[in-house]
Length: 233
Image 1 (cartoon, helix red, strand yellow):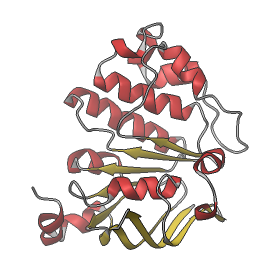
Image 2 (image 1 turned 90 degrees about the vertical axis):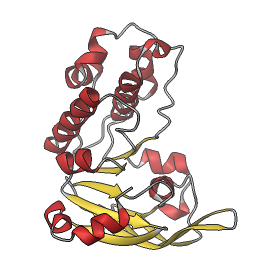
Image 3 (image 1 turned 90 degrees about the horizontal axis):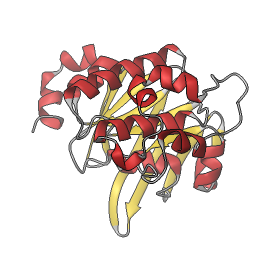
Image 4 (image 1 turned 180 degrees about the vertical axis):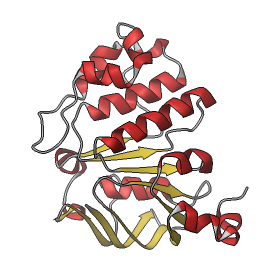
């Protein structure tokens, strides 16, 4: 469904991604792992064309994304949840969800406010509250729910467990597993190895913008030298 090949991305003269390539299959949850500064966020932004690769290819369901502006990428059905969340703090939960609404897509689960409130009971209880009254974890849930209102065919999550309470992290893992059960492929950029292991079919490790590992978590556990080299603090 998604394939990156030979992607090179820069911030100014800083070379961040170096010939990066990997693929994501339909219905698969993949974790992009690495330390701070490894290039995880740049990878996600390069898929969304928020950072334009200077070389390489990003293909989504047969469409070359590097030729498109970001809004066209979103219209193709890629939902992006940034690390910063970026909810509308002066709007209520329900109003935030309406901002993200897009028409149904053929062959894709069509989300409504009610199905999202079933998925995120914490939000259902506070649907009339403004965004600024929510905790960090609730804001993260709202950011994901708002993106799902766009009925995405692929979901990109940038550091979804960052800075939220452990109990909310567990809820987030449960939510991602439910999305997987609906057949929605997910790429999550993550540092929390425990969280990634709970929800993912596969791990991709990058360091210095280079891919260092691509395989199952069982394969990763069988190679502790890779985990220690690229994921240990």
